[in-house]
Image (cartoon, rainbow over all chains, first blue to last red; front, side, top):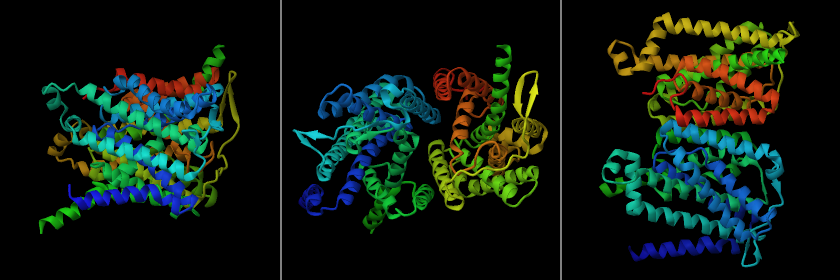
Length: 312
Length: 286
């Protein structure tokens, strides 16, 4: 790698970590935190899209993580670290249990199956009022604590979210560059080929699903403590749709595209704060335009421009 | 007890007929275009909005308003098909994301034009008919009767009309159909229009019974999903059987437990069917 690239990366990293301590705008920091959280979630969706299995259950899995963390802290009295850890573990565990059943199904049927599964999870949160608090959810979830510091400060919460998003990003990049990533690609393109080479396709699919579920679970654990409440409405299938939108807009082909998608789409609603309807309309129209004219997303567009430049 | 069971059956049948109208369009579009139409509920909503404008605002006769609403929704659907969906025919995942985008846009557009509040429409008929202790609201009975008439009409169209035959041919094998001189593009346009018209009709008919708002499409779409999976994606007889089944099961569970559990049961049914008979109760696997 060229020296300037390493230098640029370092500068970017320092800037990302340091800016909230200079720009003390709570609102801006909040938006940045959301970008990071959605980046992690969208990355977890990216894993599924890479193996060609679009999951509408990811909102529900994030919800499972959020409720796990909230209940472990509030009902069982464990500290945040345990609750947060378990949010990811349980997210992955649920995926491990349902994966072997759900992943047998492909294509549209998988989408519909995960959709139905998500709805069942959501309805369980709503119906089982004693444990999950029904439609209102659970209030007063303890804030995040790291080494005894309560993350009441917005900047510290942002740093935690940034660390999670960065962790997800580098993990995915490493995976996609490894042999595991190459096998994932064949799973989407030509599973028969992969299997004829002795690849246990189901095991790989399951591994991807579990990792993806764990990432969504961690995001849920963060969500619960950041907002200090959880309610079922936040985890319906539109939550999963949002993650798909981020992926489509940014470009599925690269984790950088996913980050780009989150960085553009999450702050977007703030431009239309006075008129929520216009914000949703714009969201829908942008998605239509991208699907119709830029199927490879922003990252694909950048790639095309670069490609043209290199041709000269 | 028997009376209660018959009452549940009647309630289930009334809801089931509406579900069937939603599900038939949904499954027709999938069978022919291989597109899962996540915007189907939005066409239901547009039908309700149209009938509200025509019937309560402009004062047109209710039945004429319902018919006009169906035509308006069909035209909107065909424009959307031509402009946005055609390139996604057969590309299931991307087509699905496109219909999601259309759903978001239509809902937001309706919210901007009509506002987010719930509005009510005067009922064209009122009162309750009592048949041997079984109570049936007259407005529901009217919806049921119109629904049955539409379903019969739809059946004869598919069975005997040239266009209906062509649609079935394209659903079976579009290449073979094209070799026979059928233009698949026209069939896509026609079937999407008909599918949307059915959804619009369902919305127009149910509008006086429930309230009207930009968000009313979501529940009927979920029901259409369930029905279509029960019956088999792309299967028309399956949509009829699935609709009746869902209507009756829901009415039963809702009477004895509650509606949340009724919805859970229906989704659990969907998971089981998808796992063990992904082609549905009536569908044939390809």
